[in-house]
Length: 412
Image (cartoon, rainbow, N blue to C red; front, side, top):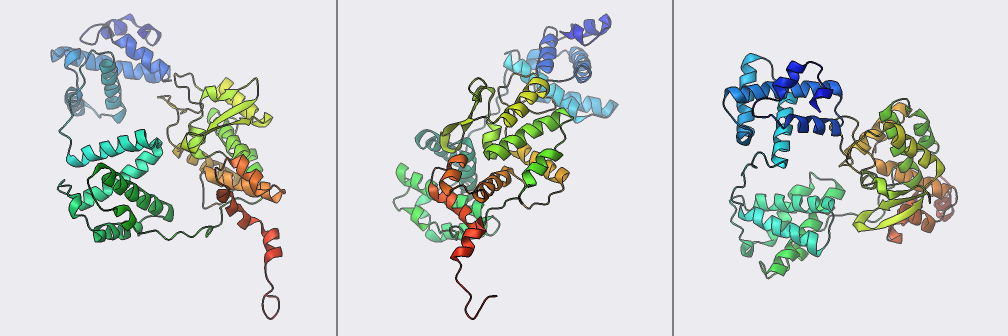
């Protein structure tokens, strides 16, 4: 494998000697699998060759390689030349590969877990196994519970029997001032769930979940943020489809515009979710639910163009992957938000919201303007409850005008 990157036999011979002999080909294959170019792979392999000679000089074996050895080599390089962060990443990538192959033992960094960490791990298993929460919900719940435990018990002495109502209300008031209304609701939900868990385990006798104060959040108090009519088509027209990233972004925007998918639903799409013969797409939504939807021709064409010409070869089965090495599937919605932000900027559209929900709300309001019922909108958006769709009635201004009462004393 190394021969494909180097022409000079002397360079290849140096790479095949020393403590790392026999592992260089495996690293070269891994770099090619992760989408690194020939030039970038050659640079990394040269660095590994220099590191290999340094190990030989220090009489170190591959089995002795760990983070401390890499740090020693970094300090050695720093005395001789400027050290790039990419160089250290290359060596860490090599170390991970050797550990995967069982050549280098994994570092035993497991310290004795604290009482707080043990409790959080038990609570995490309870949420996953008993309640079946998703990874995103787990992160939200554990983040706020951990924050509460750190503030209330800084010395790790978890005395829940002495926990008072004032401790809970004071914490919620202090935290809620720095959180948005949605985050504040997540905060109180996480605390109520945690206190119910403590009572379930016998840690407390009092139902402290009822002591968590409510965050004021009036139903339908806000209006969904959406774009004016014609904005979505303008965004699609202004999307640059002359580059691989532009065509990937166009495929993402088509999914958001035609289906109103959530950001997490776009990220979770796999290659197996498309049935090209039947023209269907499987969408995995919230709470483990999934739906089969018909694939419109324009969406199918944009996805097919991306898959045939622009999606890099990689081992991941995720539909959308990174454009730069290492090639991996998109793991968070941050890339989708950046895609929407770039699209809005190119189209010259100013919007306070820049996530995938902007397209979702716009699709719902456009359907409402074309005469669709709230039930039909709820089916397209895959709402589980009808009340979730009722908020779009607030943007049906012609219908609201018919319900408005005349102003006392005349029109204004």
